[in-house]
Length: 127
Image (cartoon, helix red, strand yellow):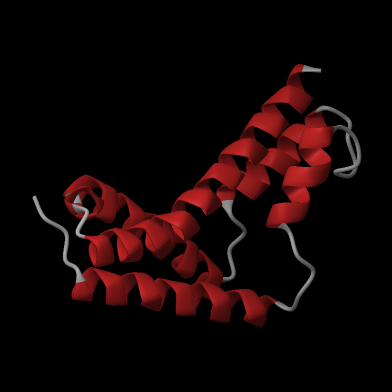
C-alpha cells in the first residue's frame, strides 16, 4: 500500500511540475502585459527556465524523466503492472502520458523552451 501511495505522490508531483512550466509561461506573459511586477521575480524566472531546460535537455538526450522512472519503480515495488486502478493513477497519468513518436516530444519541448527563452529576453527577470 505504501508503495502505491508513494507512486501516486510522485505522479502528482510530476503533474504539478508540468502545470508550473505551462502555466508559469502564461503567467509571465499575461503578468507582464498587465504590469504585474511579481512575475519577473528572479527566483521564479530562474526556476522556471531551469525546469524547462532540464526537460528539453532530457528529450534531446533521449532520457526518460527521473520522475517517471521513480514512479514506475514504485509501482513495480507495489506489484502494479499498469496505471489501472484508483482515481489518481487513472486521471493524472492520462494528463501526462501520450502515445506519440519521440520526435514529437523533442519538438514540442524545444518549441516551448524557445518560447520561455523569448519571454526571458522580452521581459527579463528582476532582482
